Length: 95
Figure 1: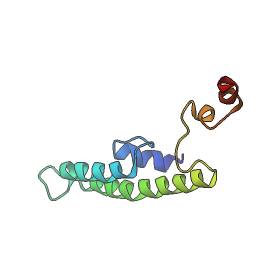
Figure 2: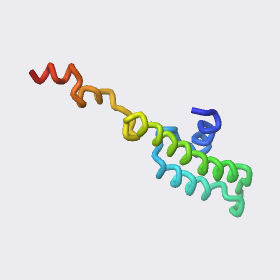
Figure 3: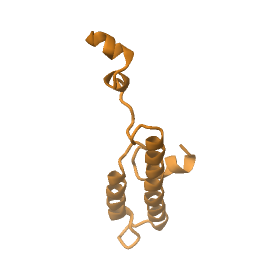
Figure 4: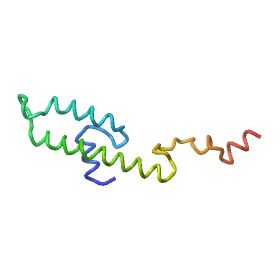
């Protein structure tokens, strides 16, 4: 993951595994705290939040596209995923 993307998720107080819906929610919550029109607001922080909220969904969409092109359907494989797909170990156990 590029450093700027990691920084974007950090600015939103999220991990890169967060779904896109959480990016929007994080932006709303952080805007309520840092908006420059509010008492104690912070314009540079709000600009960072806005930029991060634009960048993070783009990266998530690209990750989703890459995963679907790799045949994973946009999902991160679970630890036992191969066994459920009919691997040799699951078919031999069924015999």
